[in-house]
Image 1 (spheres, rainbow, N blue to C red):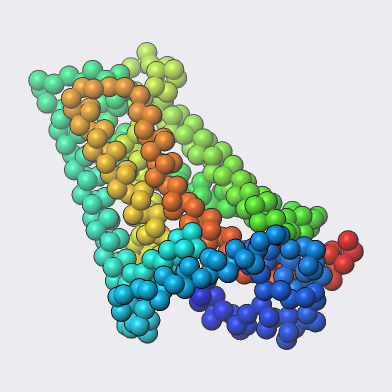
Image 2 (spheres, rainbow, N blue to C red; image 1 turned 180 degrees about the horizontal axis):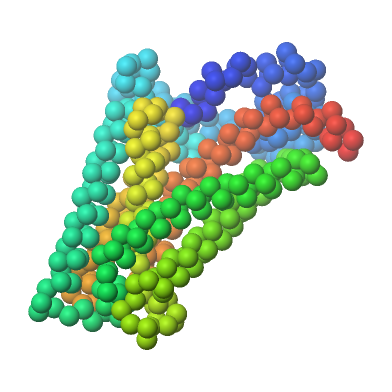
Length: 350
């Protein structure tokens, strides 16, 4: 993986062995196994801590990956030092994906252009469509049916949802950092030796903070609509909650992905390839949802859009799995660097 391979170059140590050899006395048997990396170079590094089949699984996966690399017929492998750097990563430790940085930038530019064009065209056509004299929108959930200034409502809603997405991610990260700080002061090795526990321990607070902040922003959004822009005072909170803002929410998600892709393009770095991995799956799906929603609305076909929820979850399965795999590997790389801080204290105390 291009990210994991470059980490030693960012640090003054080439491996965890250098860290313990230069800075600390090496403890344990120093078995270089991957899946149990939490115990590597610690007093817990003993034969009794081995999980059955760990070394065999590591060898099998590595052999398959090496075979795929050697059987790669194109010459991209030989162009590692080319002016156009390569992006490479494995999928499930078995299949190697390779493409150039210029290809990644081109794909991201195309996605950004499509998002801008389709988003603007959807807003313009939707506004013209609802302003026709011979047309009357019968959708009770439509903002053009409920509000006096629907175009302003749409723009404000997109801005609010976009800000909500950004701040929710920041607040979610803050939740995880707060929990990390609390654990570092109380039980700094409570997650030690269990990668699943470590991932859930820090991802769940992040998800919780994201959901709570999104909910608060949604309440703020409804409050603004209730006070300022309703056609009639007859509409109460119950009616307001029935209004659909699917396009505004979907387009705000695309705006966040566009911003992340712009950052990725201007950084011109192969290390942010994870942005493309998510964008290439999520952005086309949301663009299709936006177009489909407009067509159904134009044909006066109304109904609950359950696909707005389960389709993004289904499509995001692969990038999510890859992201979790990368996070897991990063944890195991940095665990030997963090372990000495606690090895002589908490671990030796039992």
